[in-house]
Image (tube, rainbow, N blue to C red; front, side, top):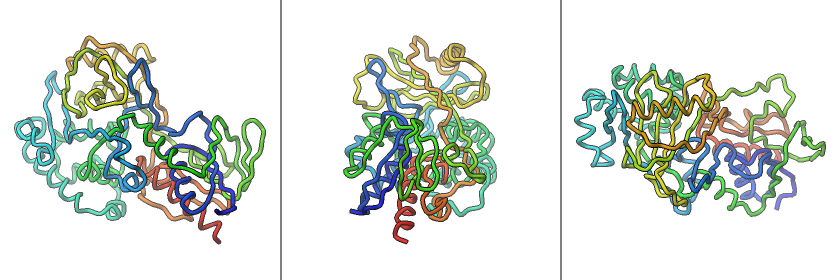
Length: 412
């Protein structure tokens, strides 16, 4: 075993992967976590017997880092079908990939929400990105996603009825200003794999990573005040010393540095409701096309198997748009929209998750960065998806890159 001491601040996905890589290279890392459990932004609660993730999150099974570090069989992944239900003008229709799910063939062919020319372009784009390497995607010139779609030839009809509501829910912004690199990457991941949720909820992912660690020590409910060189000062006044410190969280409040700018974040709100019946019978997401609606998407979680045994149907509503409604008015407005736009009534509000730091706001996205770019000095290294792009894959990759950078510094 290596004798050098490595502390990791943050037990989110990046911190857990960093510890995984360090263990494989003979280290015994120590993870400092301010809360009482692992996971960071990936958490799951049980409320009144219902399994609630902190926000509507999915794992894309084609993520290269996820395939490398996760055991999908043990996670008991529950897969979505490759399609969507689109609610427009009080009607709903299904669009899907009939090459992967034959039951979507006729509904997709005869849907008037996307014209035939756009449908051909969708298959053309999917075929193109299946062949395109990830490295090629992340070296392309960056456009906004909306400009990319227009340049590709998609009509405004297709953008408004499908791409805008679907990718607004992924990028957590309603103007599709996110980098075209990110659009191509996510589109490729959907085209080559599935969206899925572990049977025990999304927190099963960090739990699995934690359970695989055998040489790592965890310091839970421990808050860091400041980091400088080899010294970690805790909020309670105690001080820890380390050969290498990996900061696997937003470092802006922990390091005194002129160049260390505070990160900006995208926010969203997720509301959970229960209802006696379902308006969507398959494990696919529902999209709301009305430009004035608060609701971006809905999903019936009881269309997938869960470890909990709910008494009624459970569904979530994601709100991406900015608004100034307090909780009671937000619930009232969302309930009203569910009835008017989706025909969903006889529902019971369960819980609201207000998530101010749902995704990092990355202006320049990357797949990987060099060790020099994340190494502040010979003792402090940064990790986190905010350094690459807003995705679970990036969180894992950044943890791996940080651990390898730490080993490189120590070896030198």
